Length: 221
Image: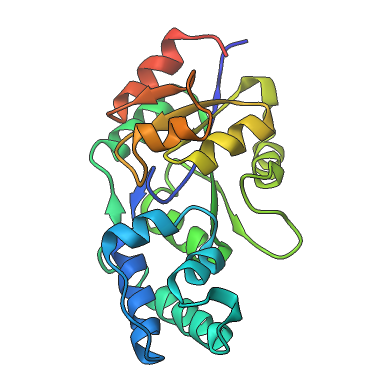
């Protein structure tokens, strides 16, 4: 059956958010006397939600007595500064416009917390994407399939007509757990080798956003 619905990851797929995440993490770390983290460290820490990001960034993680305060500081700062240096990757807006003009349904599913997901979608993609789901209480984060299923439900789509597009091993596992094919983009936060190490040997890989449209036009999923 022809694919007519695309579920996108956000960070590392549509938006380059890495520097704002690093700045927010380091603001909180410095405020509580912890060493700052490099951009490369942050790149490896992201993918499983902001709580896990801070657990990896703070010495001793959740065992650190100052974890909750530092995590709260990060969240407060990031909500204000989540768009200081963030922006769409090259060709992303062209891809979304092309998909929209050709009748594709689209949604965003992210492990970023809900308020930030909705704010960033409103700022950048709301012309094309009406459904944007982030982390919230009562629904499991990726790689569990729950948020993907919620997006499919809100779109009124059929699962067999959907494909997932992301940039990490978490996204590959999310697609697999959701029963969807996955396109992995290589301009994001993980290398092809890192994704393959998670078991994605036979995955679909793209190096430029417009290749997503070409694959969808060519293939039956």
